[in-house]
Length: 142
Image (tube, rainbow, N blue to C red):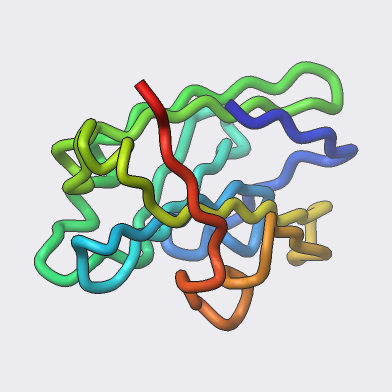
């Protein structure tokens, strides 16, 4: 769940060009896969949620993975909330991998109606360079 405070909510071009608007980019990589995942999570101007997968590891189906993501978005005042779940099966992850760990990054794009004005990420690796090796390493203990 990510909450973003933004004076103007704008996603003029959903789908593959979603990154030009207000959206959340979520990226993760596993040492068990060749390549990494990069998803866009957006709230369309009509209020519908929009999920796109720009990058998928070798042998994985990005379009199918994007369709399996459950995304709920909500806008209250100047706050947009994005709540997403990624099914293990669709991205080739599982409980064992969650305990072993993987690389993860988040980037927010800002658009006030005409073009992307700014972007911020947890750490370098999404914006421009697409280097999953820079992402923070996370793991979940059971």
